[in-house]
Amino acid sequence: MKAAVIAYPGSNCEYDTYYVLNNVLNLKTDLIWHTETNLKEYDLIVIPGGFSFGDYLRAGAMAKISPASLALIEEAYKGKFILGICNGFQILTELGLLPGALIVNTSLRFICKFVDLEVINKDTPFTHKIEKDVIKIPIAHFQGNYFIDEDNLKKLEDNKQIVLTYKENPNGSVKDIAGIINEKQNIFGLMPHPERATESILGSRDGYYIFESVIESIRKS
Image (cartoon, rainbow, N blue to C red; front, side, top):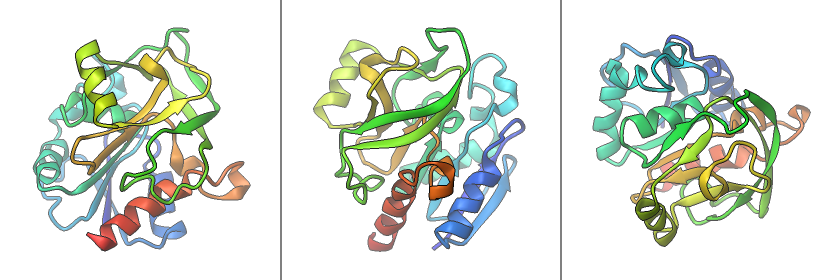
């Protein structure tokens, strides 16, 4: 079993994510550059946080045409497990692998702080190891305001694709949405940073269980 963390120009959480997967969860992990065209050997592919290509145009808009992103689409349709964190979530929506879009926070300010998240759906490959109803994970974003039209919002609700919501909405996201999953449940995107909450010394260990959940799901698949 093997994971890949894709780094783009402007990514800044790739080493944190690599460390968590490789050193904390002992999953063999490669840090790969965005020019990579072959992702076939990986069971889990993670797009980390940061500001890919400086968030020019809009967050994730340029990263979606990178070779690794195009290779990611191919693996997504094969059912590979894919996790997009913060900028990774933005890139997944730009690629059309998750519905909706991430727009500028209503405060027009960058927000960096711990938040409380309600775990709305624990029955997913990414959340089944979470025992708490509310978890504590930090956010760090300027374009974290999740938007989706009413028809597609209803689909998310009907299909139980809303996985995490904010207890207190920090950015204006529709229905307080912090993280969603696709219908096939192999692609999960969230704005909070679970890699920054995997060891008690960091102030919370709640993010650990997201990674543990998907690793166990891979082993069972």
